[in-house]
Image 1 (cartoon, helix red, strand yellow):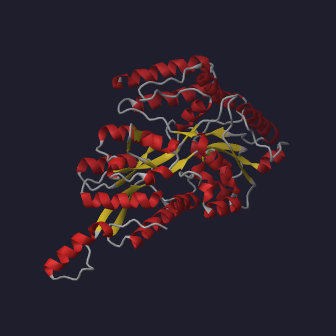
Image 2 (cartoon, one colour):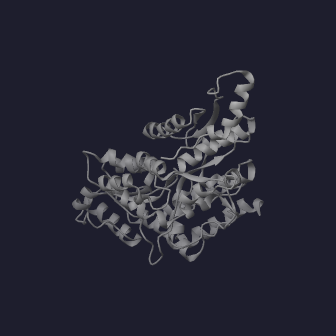
Image 3 (cartoon, one colour):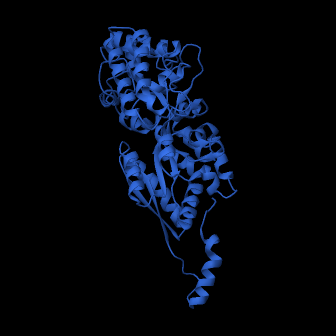
Length: 424
C-alpha cells in the first residue's frame, strides 16, 4: 500500500533546524487537522479505523474527527467556517456543494495537487463531476448511495409472485404492489419520500428521462411530459392501495419488520436491511425500476469531501489524507465496511472486492448501477427552502388524488421557479 507522508517534505528543514539547535534530528512537530463528518455507529468505527491507519503511516499528522448529525453537518461546517474555527476536510452533502462553492472559500484540489493529479483519476468521472468547475475540482466522492429496490421474498411468495423475478419496470412495480396488497393485506411497497429532502422526487423524475433542475439549479423543469408521467406514478401508488400515506421512517420500519412487500430507498441502508431481515424474512435487492423505454439514470445520494486548509503545513497534511483515502484498496474497504457504493473505477479489479461480492451478493445490483449514476441536482443559494416546501406540498396533493399530475405538477413548478427567481 502506498504511504503519503509529510516527512519527505519536511526532512531537510527538520534536519537543519535540529542541527542549529543541537537537538536530535528525529524530533518532528505534530500537525493536527480537522475532519468534519456524520458517520456514527459501525460506520464511525470503520471511518476512524481508516484515519488511524493513516496516522500510523504518518506519525507527524493527527486527524481530529468532529461529528455532526447528517441533518446538521451543513450548518456545523458553515458555523465553523464563519467563526474562524479550523476546518481542514469537510463532509458536504452533495446537493449543497454549489452553495458551498459560492459562499465559502474552498480549495481547488487540482491546484493543491501541485501538478500531480493522478490520484484523482481513480474516481469514476461521473462521480467527480459533482465537484468539478471547469478544470478545477473542489469535491471528491466519499459517502455515496444509489436508490435500490428492496423486497421481501417471503411476501412475494405469499402473494403468488416469483421471488426470483423482482419488478424491473415501474409498470411491474405498481402491478406487484397492488397484487401484494390485495393478496396479503400488507402494504405492497413505497418509495423514499422526504427524509432526504427532495431526493426521492428528483430520482423519479431523472430516471424517466426528464430534467429536474437546469444546470445551475435556478429553474425547475420537471413539468415536461416525462416528468409529469413519472410523478403520476407517485399518485398511482396511493390510488391502487399499495402505498399507505406515512413517513419514510414508518415505511422503513414496516419493511425492516417484515410487514411491507417492497421499499425503494438508498443503498446506504443495505447493511441495515440485511441485519434487520436476518431470522425474520428472506431479503431481495434489485435495481431501481426502469421507466418505459428510458435508460436508467439515477442520482447519487450522500456526501463528498471538500478541502479548506489555508495554512501550508495543514493543507499538505490534509492532501496527504485525501490521497490516502483515494487509493483503490482504501476506497473499496470503506465501501465494504460502511455499505456505501464504490466510488473508484473498476472496483472488481480489487481481489478483496471480488471476495466481498461473492460473500455478499446483495451488493451486485449496487455495483451495476455505478455507471448509471448521475450527479444529484444542486439547489442555488437562495429560495431553496421555499422551493422544497412547495415540492413536499405537491407530493401531498398527488397523494390526495383529487387531481391528476398533469394539473398539479405544472402549478408546483411555477411556484418553485417563483421562489428561485431571486437567483436568476
